[in-house]
Image (cartoon, rainbow, N blue to C red):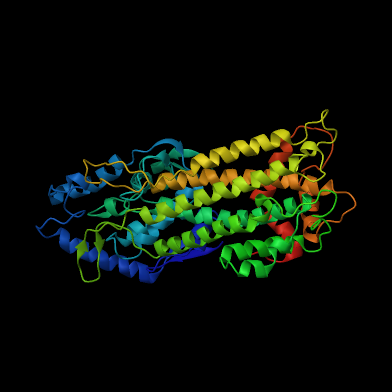
Length: 512
Protein backbone atom coordinates (compact mmCIF):
# COMPACT_ATOMS: atom_id res chain seq x y z
CA UNK A 1 0.00 0.00 0.00
CA UNK A 2 1.13 3.52 -0.80
CA UNK A 3 2.61 5.41 2.16
CA UNK A 4 2.59 9.19 2.62
CA UNK A 5 5.34 10.59 4.83
CA UNK A 6 4.38 13.82 6.61
CA UNK A 7 7.20 16.26 7.29
CA UNK A 8 7.37 19.85 8.45
CA UNK A 9 7.00 21.57 5.08
CA UNK A 10 3.49 20.58 4.11
CA UNK A 11 2.08 17.96 1.76
CA UNK A 12 0.97 17.81 -1.88
CA UNK A 13 -2.47 17.58 -3.42
CA UNK A 14 -1.57 14.05 -4.53
CA UNK A 15 -0.84 13.15 -0.91
CA UNK A 16 -4.27 14.41 0.14
CA UNK A 17 -6.01 12.41 -2.59
CA UNK A 18 -4.00 9.30 -1.75
CA UNK A 19 -5.08 9.44 1.90
CA UNK A 20 -8.65 10.66 1.39
CA UNK A 21 -9.62 8.48 -1.55
CA UNK A 22 -6.91 5.85 -1.82
CA UNK A 23 -6.57 4.82 1.82
CA UNK A 24 -2.82 5.44 1.81
CA UNK A 25 -0.97 4.87 5.06
CA UNK A 26 0.68 7.74 6.91
CA UNK A 27 4.08 7.97 8.57
CA UNK A 28 5.58 10.88 10.49
CA UNK A 29 9.09 11.83 9.44
CA UNK A 30 11.86 12.08 12.01
CA UNK A 31 12.09 15.78 11.17
CA UNK A 32 8.41 16.22 12.04
CA UNK A 33 8.74 14.38 15.35
CA UNK A 34 11.72 16.55 16.31
CA UNK A 35 9.85 19.74 15.38
CA UNK A 36 6.82 18.63 17.39
CA UNK A 37 8.97 17.99 20.45
CA UNK A 38 10.79 21.33 20.14
CA UNK A 39 7.58 23.34 19.83
CA UNK A 40 6.06 21.43 22.73
CA UNK A 41 9.01 22.38 24.88
CA UNK A 42 8.24 26.06 24.21
CA UNK A 43 4.59 25.60 25.18
CA UNK A 44 5.48 23.72 28.36
CA UNK A 45 7.86 26.50 29.38
CA UNK A 46 5.19 29.15 28.84
CA UNK A 47 2.59 27.06 30.67
CA UNK A 48 4.80 27.03 33.75
CA UNK A 49 4.96 30.83 33.89
CA UNK A 50 2.35 32.99 35.66
CA UNK A 51 1.80 35.24 32.64
CA UNK A 52 -1.37 34.41 30.65
CA UNK A 53 -0.82 33.16 27.08
CA UNK A 54 -3.79 32.75 24.74
CA UNK A 55 -4.64 29.12 24.11
CA UNK A 56 -2.17 27.93 26.74
CA UNK A 57 -3.45 29.43 29.97
CA UNK A 58 -6.55 31.40 28.95
CA UNK A 59 -10.08 30.76 27.77
CA UNK A 60 -10.97 30.98 24.08
CA UNK A 61 -12.61 33.45 21.73
CA UNK A 62 -14.64 36.00 23.65
CA UNK A 63 -13.66 34.19 26.88
CA UNK A 64 -9.92 34.76 26.36
CA UNK A 65 -9.77 37.31 29.17
CA UNK A 66 -9.94 34.60 31.85
CA UNK A 67 -6.65 33.19 33.14
CA UNK A 68 -6.94 29.43 33.72
CA UNK A 69 -5.08 27.85 36.62
CA UNK A 70 -2.87 24.80 35.97
CA UNK A 71 -5.20 22.32 37.66
CA UNK A 72 -8.03 23.27 35.26
CA UNK A 73 -6.10 23.28 31.98
CA UNK A 74 -6.64 19.64 31.05
CA UNK A 75 -10.33 20.15 31.65
CA UNK A 76 -10.19 23.34 29.55
CA UNK A 77 -8.76 21.48 26.54
CA UNK A 78 -11.22 18.63 26.90
CA UNK A 79 -14.10 21.06 27.26
CA UNK A 80 -13.28 23.04 24.14
CA UNK A 81 -13.44 19.87 22.06
CA UNK A 82 -16.69 18.69 23.61
CA UNK A 83 -18.42 22.06 23.39
CA UNK A 84 -17.24 22.79 19.85
CA UNK A 85 -18.34 19.37 18.55
CA UNK A 86 -21.75 20.89 17.90
CA UNK A 87 -22.40 19.91 14.30
CA UNK A 88 -25.84 19.04 13.00
CA UNK A 89 -27.40 17.58 9.89
CA UNK A 90 -26.36 14.73 7.57
CA UNK A 91 -23.00 13.03 7.86
CA UNK A 92 -20.16 14.36 5.75
CA UNK A 93 -18.60 11.93 3.27
CA UNK A 94 -15.79 9.65 4.44
CA UNK A 95 -13.28 11.06 1.95
CA UNK A 96 -13.93 14.60 3.20
CA UNK A 97 -13.36 13.58 6.83
CA UNK A 98 -10.14 11.77 5.96
CA UNK A 99 -8.88 14.82 4.07
CA UNK A 100 -9.87 17.03 6.99
CA UNK A 101 -7.97 14.92 9.53
CA UNK A 102 -4.93 14.48 7.32
CA UNK A 103 -4.61 18.19 6.63
CA UNK A 104 -4.89 18.99 10.33
CA UNK A 105 -2.13 16.45 10.95
CA UNK A 106 -0.07 18.21 8.26
CA UNK A 107 -0.27 21.49 10.17
CA UNK A 108 0.36 19.81 13.52
CA UNK A 109 3.57 18.32 12.09
CA UNK A 110 4.80 21.74 10.97
CA UNK A 111 6.15 22.38 14.46
CA UNK A 112 4.13 25.58 14.83
CA UNK A 113 1.25 24.26 16.93
CA UNK A 114 2.85 23.00 20.16
CA UNK A 115 1.13 19.61 20.02
CA UNK A 116 3.01 16.65 21.51
CA UNK A 117 4.42 14.02 19.14
CA UNK A 118 2.23 11.30 20.67
CA UNK A 119 -0.92 13.24 19.76
CA UNK A 120 0.20 13.51 16.13
CA UNK A 121 1.03 9.81 16.06
CA UNK A 122 -2.41 8.94 17.39
CA UNK A 123 -3.99 11.00 14.61
CA UNK A 124 -1.99 9.00 12.07
CA UNK A 125 -2.91 5.73 13.79
CA UNK A 126 -6.62 6.51 13.57
CA UNK A 127 -6.38 7.28 9.86
CA UNK A 128 -4.29 4.15 9.23
CA UNK A 129 -6.86 2.04 11.06
CA UNK A 130 -9.59 3.27 8.73
CA UNK A 131 -11.52 4.90 11.57
CA UNK A 132 -13.57 7.87 10.40
CA UNK A 133 -15.14 10.28 12.89
CA UNK A 134 -18.80 11.18 12.37
CA UNK A 135 -18.79 14.79 11.14
CA UNK A 136 -21.97 16.70 10.32
CA UNK A 137 -22.90 19.03 7.46
CA UNK A 138 -23.50 22.17 9.50
CA UNK A 139 -21.34 23.85 12.12
CA UNK A 140 -18.49 25.64 10.35
CA UNK A 141 -18.40 29.35 9.51
CA UNK A 142 -14.95 29.02 7.99
CA UNK A 143 -13.42 31.12 10.78
CA UNK A 144 -11.69 30.30 13.07
CA UNK A 145 -11.32 27.61 10.48
CA UNK A 146 -13.63 24.60 10.38
CA UNK A 147 -14.21 24.48 14.13
CA UNK A 148 -17.15 22.11 14.53
CA UNK A 149 -16.01 19.53 11.93
CA UNK A 150 -12.49 19.45 13.38
CA UNK A 151 -13.92 19.19 16.90
CA UNK A 152 -15.80 16.02 15.99
CA UNK A 153 -12.48 14.58 14.74
CA UNK A 154 -10.70 15.62 17.95
CA UNK A 155 -13.48 14.02 19.96
CA UNK A 156 -12.62 10.67 18.38
CA UNK A 157 -8.98 11.25 19.31
CA UNK A 158 -10.15 11.51 22.93
CA UNK A 159 -12.13 8.26 22.60
CA UNK A 160 -15.48 10.03 22.71
CA UNK A 161 -18.37 10.48 20.30
CA UNK A 162 -19.12 8.22 17.35
CA UNK A 163 -16.99 7.06 14.45
CA UNK A 164 -17.24 4.70 11.52
CA UNK A 165 -15.03 1.64 11.47
CA UNK A 166 -13.30 0.23 8.39
CA UNK A 167 -16.32 -2.08 8.02
CA UNK A 168 -18.61 0.93 7.55
CA UNK A 169 -20.40 0.43 10.86
CA UNK A 170 -20.78 3.42 13.20
CA UNK A 171 -19.83 2.64 16.78
CA UNK A 172 -18.70 4.56 19.88
CA UNK A 173 -15.24 5.92 19.14
CA UNK A 174 -13.79 4.47 22.36
CA UNK A 175 -14.76 0.95 21.27
CA UNK A 176 -13.19 1.41 17.85
CA UNK A 177 -9.93 2.74 19.28
CA UNK A 178 -9.74 -0.17 21.73
CA UNK A 179 -10.44 -2.69 18.96
CA UNK A 180 -7.43 -1.36 17.05
CA UNK A 181 -5.12 -1.06 20.05
CA UNK A 182 -5.13 2.76 20.02
CA UNK A 183 -5.07 4.60 23.34
CA UNK A 184 -7.19 7.77 23.51
CA UNK A 185 -5.25 10.95 24.27
CA UNK A 186 -5.64 13.28 27.22
CA UNK A 187 -5.13 16.74 25.82
CA UNK A 188 -2.79 19.20 27.49
CA UNK A 189 -2.21 22.96 27.20
CA UNK A 190 -3.02 24.34 23.75
CA UNK A 191 -3.63 20.94 22.16
CA UNK A 192 -7.42 21.12 22.06
CA UNK A 193 -7.27 24.50 20.37
CA UNK A 194 -4.57 23.38 17.94
CA UNK A 195 -6.72 20.46 16.77
CA UNK A 196 -9.65 22.73 15.91
CA UNK A 197 -8.18 25.85 14.31
CA UNK A 198 -7.77 25.28 10.57
CA UNK A 199 -9.12 25.58 7.04
CA UNK A 200 -8.64 21.85 6.55
CA UNK A 201 -12.18 20.87 5.57
CA UNK A 202 -12.61 23.52 2.93
CA UNK A 203 -9.08 22.92 1.61
CA UNK A 204 -9.61 19.17 1.37
CA UNK A 205 -12.84 19.66 -0.55
CA UNK A 206 -11.12 22.18 -2.86
CA UNK A 207 -8.36 19.69 -3.68
CA UNK A 208 -10.85 16.91 -4.45
CA UNK A 209 -13.01 19.26 -6.54
CA UNK A 210 -9.98 20.28 -8.59
CA UNK A 211 -9.15 16.63 -9.26
CA UNK A 212 -12.72 15.94 -10.37
CA UNK A 213 -12.94 19.09 -12.47
CA UNK A 214 -9.72 18.26 -14.30
CA UNK A 215 -11.51 15.18 -15.61
CA UNK A 216 -14.82 16.98 -16.20
CA UNK A 217 -13.36 19.84 -18.21
CA UNK A 218 -11.72 17.30 -20.53
CA UNK A 219 -15.05 15.47 -20.67
CA UNK A 220 -16.82 18.70 -21.60
CA UNK A 221 -14.34 19.32 -24.43
CA UNK A 222 -15.10 15.84 -25.75
CA UNK A 223 -18.89 16.24 -25.60
CA UNK A 224 -18.67 19.72 -27.14
CA UNK A 225 -16.72 18.22 -30.03
CA UNK A 226 -19.31 15.46 -30.42
CA UNK A 227 -22.11 18.03 -30.47
CA UNK A 228 -20.26 20.12 -33.06
CA UNK A 229 -19.94 17.02 -35.19
CA UNK A 230 -23.59 16.02 -34.79
CA UNK A 231 -24.64 19.57 -35.76
CA UNK A 232 -22.38 19.52 -38.86
CA UNK A 233 -20.47 22.46 -37.45
CA UNK A 234 -17.07 23.72 -38.53
CA UNK A 235 -13.82 22.91 -36.78
CA UNK A 236 -12.08 25.86 -38.45
CA UNK A 237 -12.86 27.98 -35.36
CA UNK A 238 -10.58 25.66 -33.37
CA UNK A 239 -7.47 26.49 -35.39
CA UNK A 240 -4.47 27.22 -33.12
CA UNK A 241 -3.68 30.50 -34.86
CA UNK A 242 -7.11 31.88 -33.88
CA UNK A 243 -6.56 31.12 -30.23
CA UNK A 244 -2.97 32.33 -30.26
CA UNK A 245 -4.16 35.89 -30.83
CA UNK A 246 -6.19 35.72 -27.60
CA UNK A 247 -3.65 33.85 -25.51
CA UNK A 248 -5.64 32.62 -22.55
CA UNK A 249 -4.00 29.26 -21.75
CA UNK A 250 -7.21 27.41 -20.91
CA UNK A 251 -8.88 28.50 -24.13
CA UNK A 252 -5.99 27.21 -26.19
CA UNK A 253 -6.01 23.89 -24.35
CA UNK A 254 -9.74 23.43 -24.78
CA UNK A 255 -9.62 24.22 -28.50
CA UNK A 256 -6.70 21.81 -28.94
CA UNK A 257 -8.64 19.07 -27.19
CA UNK A 258 -11.69 19.56 -29.39
CA UNK A 259 -9.57 19.65 -32.53
CA UNK A 260 -7.85 16.40 -31.52
CA UNK A 261 -11.20 14.69 -30.93
CA UNK A 262 -12.52 15.86 -34.32
CA UNK A 263 -9.49 14.80 -36.36
CA UNK A 264 -10.56 12.84 -39.44
CA UNK A 265 -14.27 13.66 -39.21
CA UNK A 266 -16.41 13.83 -42.35
CA UNK A 267 -19.20 15.57 -40.43
CA UNK A 268 -17.52 18.95 -39.91
CA UNK A 269 -17.65 21.92 -42.29
CA UNK A 270 -21.01 21.45 -44.02
CA UNK A 271 -22.06 25.09 -43.59
CA UNK A 272 -22.95 25.62 -47.23
CA UNK A 273 -24.90 22.42 -47.75
CA UNK A 274 -28.71 22.25 -47.79
CA UNK A 275 -29.13 24.76 -44.94
CA UNK A 276 -26.38 27.38 -45.43
CA UNK A 277 -25.11 29.29 -42.40
CA UNK A 278 -22.26 31.68 -41.99
CA UNK A 279 -21.31 30.77 -38.42
CA UNK A 280 -22.20 28.22 -35.78
CA UNK A 281 -24.18 29.30 -32.73
CA UNK A 282 -22.27 30.62 -29.74
CA UNK A 283 -22.76 27.44 -27.72
CA UNK A 284 -20.79 25.58 -30.39
CA UNK A 285 -18.39 28.24 -31.66
CA UNK A 286 -17.48 29.67 -28.23
CA UNK A 287 -17.08 26.35 -26.42
CA UNK A 288 -13.29 26.78 -25.99
CA UNK A 289 -13.69 30.32 -24.69
CA UNK A 290 -16.15 29.29 -21.96
CA UNK A 291 -14.43 26.04 -21.00
CA UNK A 292 -11.07 27.81 -21.22
CA UNK A 293 -12.12 30.52 -18.79
CA UNK A 294 -13.11 27.78 -16.38
CA UNK A 295 -9.76 26.08 -16.83
CA UNK A 296 -7.95 29.32 -16.03
CA UNK A 297 -10.10 29.73 -12.93
CA UNK A 298 -9.02 26.24 -11.93
CA UNK A 299 -5.38 27.23 -12.41
CA UNK A 300 -5.81 30.11 -9.98
CA UNK A 301 -7.65 27.87 -7.50
CA UNK A 302 -4.85 25.32 -7.74
CA UNK A 303 -2.29 28.03 -6.92
CA UNK A 304 -4.29 29.00 -3.81
CA UNK A 305 -4.54 25.35 -2.78
CA UNK A 306 -0.79 24.87 -3.16
CA UNK A 307 -0.10 27.90 -0.97
CA UNK A 308 -2.54 26.66 1.65
CA UNK A 309 -0.97 23.19 1.59
CA UNK A 310 2.37 24.82 2.44
CA UNK A 311 0.83 26.80 5.30
CA UNK A 312 0.68 26.20 9.05
CA UNK A 313 -2.79 27.39 10.03
CA UNK A 314 -3.32 27.75 13.77
CA UNK A 315 -3.89 30.38 16.43
CA UNK A 316 -1.75 31.05 18.33
CA UNK A 317 1.34 29.76 16.54
CA UNK A 318 4.69 28.73 17.99
CA UNK A 319 7.59 30.55 16.31
CA UNK A 320 11.18 29.26 16.20
CA UNK A 321 12.40 32.10 18.40
CA UNK A 322 10.18 30.88 21.25
CA UNK A 323 7.32 33.33 20.85
CA UNK A 324 3.71 32.13 20.86
CA UNK A 325 1.77 34.71 18.87
CA UNK A 326 -1.89 35.26 18.06
CA UNK A 327 -2.72 35.78 14.39
CA UNK A 328 -5.54 35.67 11.86
CA UNK A 329 -4.20 33.02 9.49
CA UNK A 330 -7.15 30.73 10.22
CA UNK A 331 -9.48 33.00 8.23
CA UNK A 332 -10.80 31.05 5.25
CA UNK A 333 -11.21 33.91 2.77
CA UNK A 334 -8.46 32.84 0.29
CA UNK A 335 -9.91 29.34 0.00
CA UNK A 336 -13.54 30.45 0.16
CA UNK A 337 -13.18 32.83 -2.76
CA UNK A 338 -11.79 30.24 -5.15
CA UNK A 339 -14.40 27.69 -4.09
CA UNK A 340 -17.03 30.22 -5.12
CA UNK A 341 -15.17 31.11 -8.32
CA UNK A 342 -15.20 27.44 -9.28
CA UNK A 343 -18.93 27.12 -8.62
CA UNK A 344 -19.51 29.97 -11.10
CA UNK A 345 -17.30 28.30 -13.72
CA UNK A 346 -19.07 24.97 -13.19
CA UNK A 347 -22.51 26.57 -13.64
CA UNK A 348 -21.47 28.26 -16.86
CA UNK A 349 -19.87 25.13 -18.31
CA UNK A 350 -23.08 23.22 -17.57
CA UNK A 351 -25.18 26.01 -19.05
CA UNK A 352 -23.40 26.00 -22.41
CA UNK A 353 -23.54 22.18 -22.54
CA UNK A 354 -27.31 22.29 -21.98
CA UNK A 355 -27.69 24.83 -24.82
CA UNK A 356 -25.90 22.48 -27.21
CA UNK A 357 -28.13 19.62 -26.13
CA UNK A 358 -31.26 21.69 -26.73
CA UNK A 359 -29.98 22.60 -30.18
CA UNK A 360 -29.45 18.92 -31.02
CA UNK A 361 -33.09 18.20 -30.14
CA UNK A 362 -34.71 21.11 -32.02
CA UNK A 363 -35.44 20.22 -35.65
CA UNK A 364 -35.36 23.92 -36.57
CA UNK A 365 -31.75 24.31 -35.40
CA UNK A 366 -30.23 20.84 -35.67
CA UNK A 367 -29.62 20.93 -39.44
CA UNK A 368 -31.50 17.83 -40.42
CA UNK A 369 -31.69 15.72 -37.27
CA UNK A 370 -35.13 14.31 -36.32
CA UNK A 371 -37.12 16.16 -33.65
CA UNK A 372 -35.79 15.29 -30.19
CA UNK A 373 -33.62 12.65 -31.89
CA UNK A 374 -36.72 10.45 -31.79
CA UNK A 375 -37.14 7.28 -33.84
CA UNK A 376 -40.71 8.11 -34.91
CA UNK A 377 -41.38 11.65 -33.71
CA UNK A 378 -44.90 12.00 -32.36
CA UNK A 379 -45.16 8.33 -31.49
CA UNK A 380 -41.77 8.64 -29.79
CA UNK A 381 -40.73 11.57 -27.60
CA UNK A 382 -37.02 10.78 -27.94
CA UNK A 383 -34.77 12.72 -25.60
CA UNK A 384 -37.25 15.52 -24.83
CA UNK A 385 -37.36 14.90 -21.09
CA UNK A 386 -33.66 14.10 -20.83
CA UNK A 387 -33.16 17.77 -21.73
CA UNK A 388 -35.72 18.73 -19.06
CA UNK A 389 -33.62 16.88 -16.50
CA UNK A 390 -30.50 18.60 -17.77
CA UNK A 391 -32.21 22.00 -17.59
CA UNK A 392 -33.31 21.31 -14.00
CA UNK A 393 -29.71 20.49 -13.09
CA UNK A 394 -28.45 23.68 -14.72
CA UNK A 395 -31.03 25.76 -12.87
CA UNK A 396 -29.83 24.24 -9.60
CA UNK A 397 -26.23 24.95 -10.57
CA UNK A 398 -27.04 28.61 -11.12
CA UNK A 399 -28.40 28.81 -7.56
CA UNK A 400 -25.30 27.05 -6.26
CA UNK A 401 -23.15 29.66 -8.04
CA UNK A 402 -24.37 32.37 -5.65
CA UNK A 403 -21.25 33.08 -3.54
CA UNK A 404 -21.16 31.90 0.06
CA UNK A 405 -18.07 33.99 0.76
CA UNK A 406 -19.96 37.23 0.14
CA UNK A 407 -21.91 36.53 3.31
CA UNK A 408 -20.73 36.87 6.88
CA UNK A 409 -22.58 36.34 10.13
CA UNK A 410 -21.01 37.49 13.42
CA UNK A 411 -20.33 34.99 16.19
CA UNK A 412 -18.66 34.59 19.60
CA UNK A 413 -20.17 37.73 21.13
CA UNK A 414 -18.87 39.82 18.17
CA UNK A 415 -15.26 38.73 18.72
CA UNK A 416 -15.46 36.71 15.52
CA UNK A 417 -17.34 39.42 13.67
CA UNK A 418 -16.33 38.62 10.07
CA UNK A 419 -16.26 35.02 8.85
CA UNK A 420 -15.47 33.41 5.49
CA UNK A 421 -18.26 30.83 5.06
CA UNK A 422 -15.66 28.76 3.24
CA UNK A 423 -17.04 25.44 4.46
CA UNK A 424 -20.42 26.34 2.95
CA UNK A 425 -18.72 27.32 -0.31
CA UNK A 426 -16.98 23.93 -0.37
CA UNK A 427 -20.13 21.97 0.37
CA UNK A 428 -22.09 23.61 -2.43
CA UNK A 429 -19.18 23.15 -4.84
CA UNK A 430 -19.26 19.40 -4.15
CA UNK A 431 -22.93 19.37 -5.15
CA UNK A 432 -22.15 21.48 -8.20
CA UNK A 433 -19.40 19.12 -9.38
CA UNK A 434 -21.75 16.18 -8.90
CA UNK A 435 -24.45 17.85 -11.01
CA UNK A 436 -22.02 18.98 -13.71
CA UNK A 437 -21.16 15.32 -14.22
CA UNK A 438 -24.83 14.59 -14.89
CA UNK A 439 -25.19 17.53 -17.29
CA UNK A 440 -22.19 16.36 -19.33
CA UNK A 441 -23.62 12.84 -19.34
CA UNK A 442 -26.86 14.07 -20.93
CA UNK A 443 -24.95 15.95 -23.63
CA UNK A 444 -22.89 12.82 -24.26
CA UNK A 445 -26.08 10.78 -24.59
CA UNK A 446 -27.64 13.22 -27.04
CA UNK A 447 -24.50 13.96 -29.07
CA UNK A 448 -23.56 10.31 -29.62
CA UNK A 449 -27.10 9.59 -30.80
CA UNK A 450 -26.97 12.63 -33.10
CA UNK A 451 -23.70 11.50 -34.65
CA UNK A 452 -25.06 7.98 -35.22
CA UNK A 453 -28.10 9.44 -36.99
CA UNK A 454 -25.86 11.16 -39.57
CA UNK A 455 -25.88 8.25 -41.98
CA UNK A 456 -23.45 8.30 -44.88
CA UNK A 457 -20.83 10.45 -43.14
CA UNK A 458 -17.95 8.96 -41.17
CA UNK A 459 -17.34 10.42 -37.69
CA UNK A 460 -13.90 11.21 -36.30
CA UNK A 461 -11.71 8.35 -35.12
CA UNK A 462 -12.01 9.49 -31.49
CA UNK A 463 -15.77 9.84 -31.83
CA UNK A 464 -16.06 6.26 -33.02
CA UNK A 465 -13.97 5.11 -30.06
CA UNK A 466 -16.19 7.00 -27.62
CA UNK A 467 -19.39 5.67 -29.16
CA UNK A 468 -18.11 2.09 -29.10
CA UNK A 469 -17.07 2.42 -25.45
CA UNK A 470 -20.29 4.06 -24.29
CA UNK A 471 -22.40 1.43 -26.06
CA UNK A 472 -20.32 -1.30 -24.45
CA UNK A 473 -21.00 0.41 -21.10
CA UNK A 474 -24.74 -0.22 -21.52
CA UNK A 475 -25.84 3.12 -22.96
CA UNK A 476 -28.08 2.23 -25.88
CA UNK A 477 -28.10 4.05 -29.21
CA UNK A 478 -30.93 5.34 -31.44
CA UNK A 479 -34.23 3.49 -31.50
CA UNK A 480 -37.81 3.57 -30.24
CA UNK A 481 -38.58 5.06 -26.84
CA UNK A 482 -37.54 3.04 -23.83
CA UNK A 483 -37.08 3.50 -20.08
CA UNK A 484 -34.57 6.35 -20.21
CA UNK A 485 -33.34 6.65 -16.62
CA UNK A 486 -31.07 3.54 -16.76
CA UNK A 487 -29.41 4.84 -19.93
CA UNK A 488 -28.77 8.22 -18.32
CA UNK A 489 -27.43 6.56 -15.19
CA UNK A 490 -25.03 4.49 -17.28
CA UNK A 491 -23.89 7.60 -19.16
CA UNK A 492 -23.36 9.37 -15.84
CA UNK A 493 -21.19 6.51 -14.55
CA UNK A 494 -19.25 6.52 -17.84
CA UNK A 495 -18.35 10.18 -17.37
CA UNK A 496 -17.90 10.01 -13.59
CA UNK A 497 -15.33 7.22 -13.50
CA UNK A 498 -13.22 8.61 -16.33
CA UNK A 499 -14.11 6.12 -19.06
CA UNK A 500 -15.19 8.91 -21.42
CA UNK A 501 -11.81 10.61 -21.28
CA UNK A 502 -10.02 7.26 -21.45
CA UNK A 503 -11.95 6.24 -24.57
CA UNK A 504 -11.12 9.45 -26.41
CA UNK A 505 -7.49 9.30 -25.35
CA UNK A 506 -7.06 5.86 -26.93
CA UNK A 507 -7.09 7.82 -30.18
CA UNK A 508 -5.98 11.35 -29.29
CA UNK A 509 -3.33 10.54 -26.70
CA UNK A 510 -3.36 12.51 -23.43
CA UNK A 511 -5.72 15.49 -23.58
CA UNK A 512 -4.70 18.77 -22.01
